[in-house]
Image 1: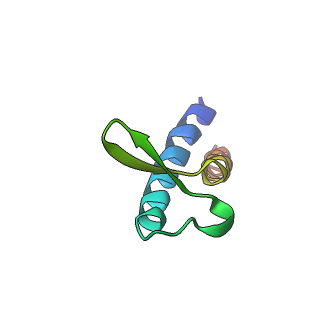
Image 2: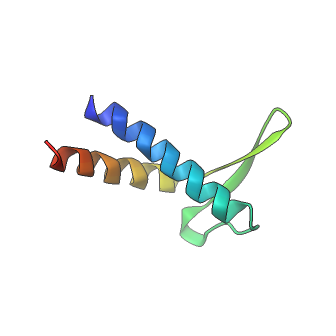
Length: 65
C-alpha cells in the first residue's frame, strides 16, 4: 500500500518540477524533461524524475512506520 502512495506522490512531485522547469524552455539536463501532446494540451514529464521521486517518497513513507 505504501508503494501506491509513493507512486502518487512521485507523480505529483514530477508534475510540479517538470512544469516549472519545462515551461522555461529547459530540459533540466539529466532530468530529461520533455513536452508531450495530450489532445490540445502540452504536458511536461520526466521518467528519471518520476522514478527518483517515487523512490524518495517510498523511503520517507517507510521511515514513518
